[in-house]
Length: 77
Image (cartoon, rainbow, N blue to C red; front, side, top):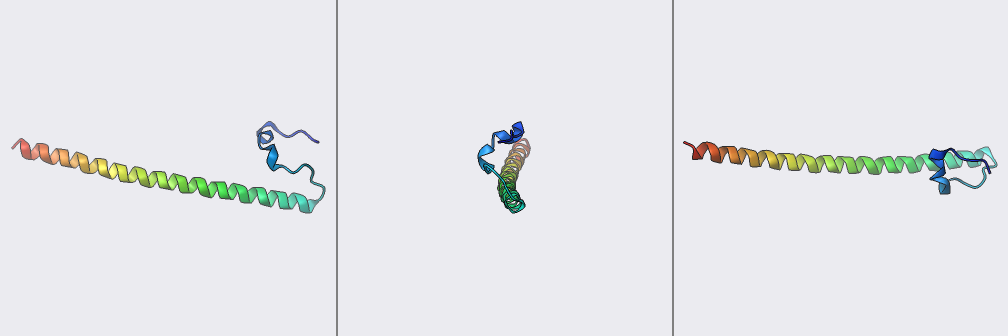
């Protein structure tokens, strides 16, 4: 069995033991690309969820700061 590059060796379980035809290689590459696409979609969703959460928190912080400013301004008059 040929040695795999170090970056790929940690994911060796996803490699078939032996690819003996172009069809098998094509099927393997398609499967690998589908897995990468799924992971990319999952990560994109997680990032968008985090950004939405951060936006909500920033909005809440902005509201709290404005409330503090309003109390300070009305209290100092």
